[in-house]
Length: 257
Length: 167
Image (tube, rainbow over all chains, first blue to last red; front, side, top):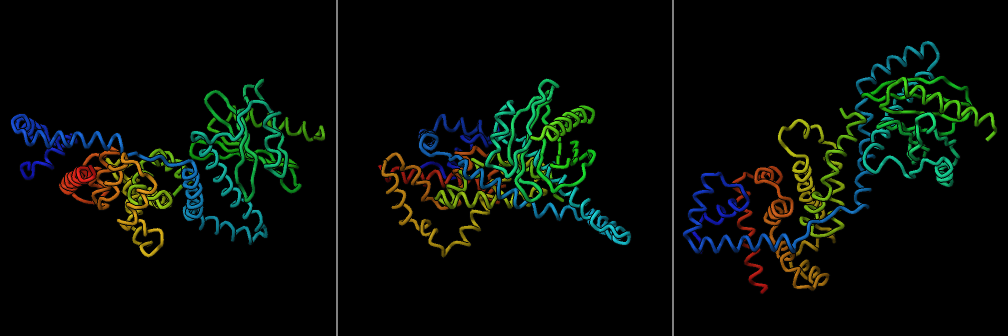
């Protein structure tokens, strides 16, 4: 047998966990004690055998998907908790508004703020590797049909490559209680996500801008669609982009498609 | 307070270590199915405690996640003790199941590892398969570094003994 207490020392030495002075002392001992040297060799052989025969496992894609989904659901209820700080404010505002008789306006605003959070989360999630697009194509005639059968509407898809905003692709997301189309455009290193879904007929609204955590969000409505655009692109360029989308949308509506 | 970007930050910090999490869970539960449940559970718990992680200096996200995986696996085992699933924790039952699945002699070392008591098995997995330092293992297992050192040494001796017996 080896010297008692030495086994753990040799292990720590082999694991690179022994202080330099202790390591030197041990090396000196190993050089002259055949029994301890044999013990060390046995440990080295064991280490090699473990490396060769005992596998590390990989999380399957199914597990990855499950984890992501579970995180998403568990993040959601707590997100409402987090907004507690502005809730009293919203409540106070609501009471004031009730007094004025426009309760629904306040509800819409609160819903708008929650929706903006969702849009932003979705945007940030989309920037993580492999999440940006479900269909990768700069061809609007590939992206548009891809949505067929996945949505109960056929979103207008345009490419703005000539104007410097190439279409990157599309994907599905879940927002405001429904599955929605998301179109992704590029601009240099930046990405722009456009969320759009049909809405009950209503008046068109001008873009409404808000900034959150360094991202710019723009929301507007057309008679047919609700639009959200989010990006870290500068507000001026994002404004240009929104104009392009609005023009294309109204051209399409007028064209009767 | 969790903001909407926190989920993104959490995923960026934690998801790269999912393989490590699954490997530890797999060796602790010794079964795919339970390991996946443990990992999923652990990630949801981790998200809840993400604030506490960001507060701690010098802890790697990997070691932090593995700590939660380990604790989840232990409490999961306790909670399911009477469940049919845990019959696999029975030594004889388990080694038979593994032997049936992998009759190759090559699996001997894996089997020997599976038969170690969990406190020995986990230090081997954390050190040999995941390369954690003694300090990190001591954080994950919640024991002093001296205990990590002696457990590792005893675990290795047990593995060598088991191998010699198999020969």
